[in-house]
Image (cartoon, rainbow, N blue to C red):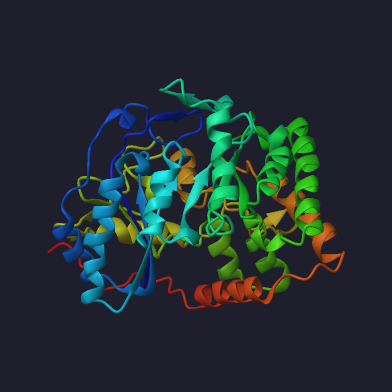
Amino acid sequence: MYDEIDFMGIRLSSYCNLDCKYCYQYSAAKEKHNLFKDYNALNKFLIKLPLAENLKFFLSGGEPSLYIDEVRKACKQIRKVMRYKDTNIHFSVYTNGTNLQGILDLMDEGLLDSFYCALSWDGLHTTKSRLVKNKKYTDEFFNKNIELLGKQCKKYREDINIRTAATRDTIGELADNYKYVLDHGCTRWEYYIVNDESAFRDEEYLDLIKDQLRKIYIMARDNNIADSLCNLENMLYMYFDEPNDYIKQRFITCRHLGNTLFVNPTGEIFPCALSDNITKVYDGIKFGDIYNGFNKDVIQAFCNDYNTPPSCGMIYKGEPCKTLHCFECAVTCKHCNGSLNKKSFNQCELRHIEYDLFKEIFIDSGYKFSDEIMNKYKNTHFENLLYNTKLNPDLPYKK
């Protein structure tokens, strides 16, 4: 593990001007203007890592659009690593939309890669799930972001991923939200499941989301834009191939862990953004810091846990599980159940509904996905085949 790092993240600040009900950060952390400052130390650390040819670098908050100058500074400082490493760095942010224009300006400057950026928008009635700190942030305010992106920023509207949380507050309107996105000229969208949401064990919610997903998949198929419905990517992978048990486990656990690292404002290193020590699921997994390197014992214990078989046995109702897109967050499982692979089973029924609808609406109807997305899925397959379960002995460990 960690033979190649293809995703890095850094929390520029934990401050946020919203307080979403499902947010993984503690509310107190979202009140702190604690800026990351030591780019010299960060770059020295990055140069010691086995960086991939293409490195996706996530500039995180809090809310990064509140710190446009800091985002600009981060991009310019971290780019210096490319003088010493054979890597191409693609910077991205995930914004709540309260300063979307600022983010678009950074794209215009060539600092942010629009394809890797995402806009959080929880639908036509976003404020159901967002506790705002400023009364100007109304539903109308957030909805105008979709209009801005679709009508006024045409060069980015097919790149930026619009993400809608699927929660008890939003699932009844998911199809209407997707239609609104399409009606305004945007195409790249996804719904995502909040990891500890237990609603999807409830028949009422399962029936509701099944109806919503059927409408969404049909809209994507009939408009010939299924390639841009991001939820389908992993379903493509599982349908068009028969991966071995190890690769199945990689998908069911988390295929991002093991090639991802995240740095907080004080320079501490974590497996991912969700495992930072300001989050509600922090479980003491701190890999080290950018000044002294990795704690080998901690990272080895993490790797050992990651490589244990999932508690579900990859079995569903007595049959081999086919939902390789299950993605029940490993870090959340660690916090709630004591192990990265000890599942809470909050998503099993939902993921099988997705799979059945995917097969019915796309596969059985003969829908043809583009060569581009099929090649992308094949590349993902190849990357996972190359993945090494053993910990890289050549990382910069503490002495």
